[in-house]
Length: 330
Image 1: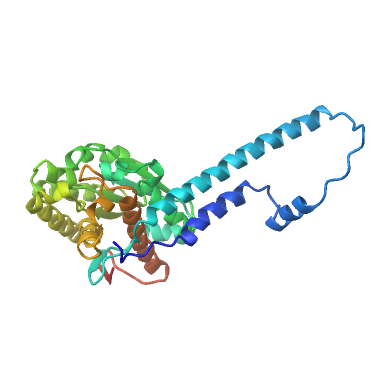
Image 2 (image 1 turned 30 degrees about the horizontal axis):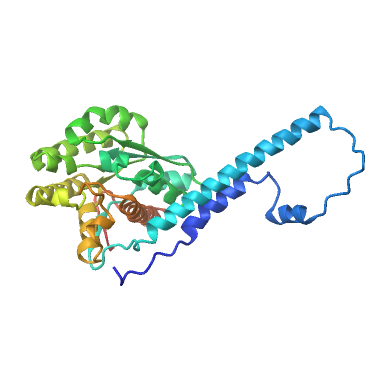
């Protein structure tokens, strides 16, 4: 671990803090105007000032209340900044080196962004999506991903819905696919699946078939962009190495056959440990299964990078047919 340099927080952290402070400032008042007003001496008061009118008293009370709200909001921004700094000061979030990964094009998301229309993303899955193991909801991967995309597309209206339910896998997810995914009319679905099937010793082939059927239903309902997320690399999953390997392979095969994207979480997390020499306990909590704050943050960061890159291809006019994969070094 001594060879790993601390991660330096840059614009990704400064941007939300600055935006929050800007929103808190009165409309039309610049930073320079605020400083000038603070620097201007207050006029001398008379020895016997006139009593304040009721309207003046109300304004003063309102101003005091607003200052209280502003102070609390600023404190919250600082608290989040400190928490984020602690997360990324452990180890840097780096993508795997020397490999290649597939990410399908995202024409629906790209089209909405180009047209200036709202974008809705549904994060569908189990406890990894719900955020079990994170110290706060703001540190689960859907919230991290939403923050990253909003930083990159500051004028876009982007909503990321967390539809994760702990303990579920494909059979349970299929029961709520219609109401929590299809009926929302999303532009993109990120489907994290397969881990609980491995832990329950379910047939990976059955899971793959259900996922393929689910993808077909989503595509038939409106053709949302879809990205699959395979199981995590963790001690609990690795105890069933053969089943995990089959699950990862079959989900990749389904993505290829159905022409959807896939984020190879297992490969990415294995690289953290085997090639980047990061101890497993640095990204997995004590239960040996769920990710911690750093694990969720890095997962979201790399997934967001892939989404931004894929959207960029479409926005730049690169015609990527739905049945053609985009392979690139990670």
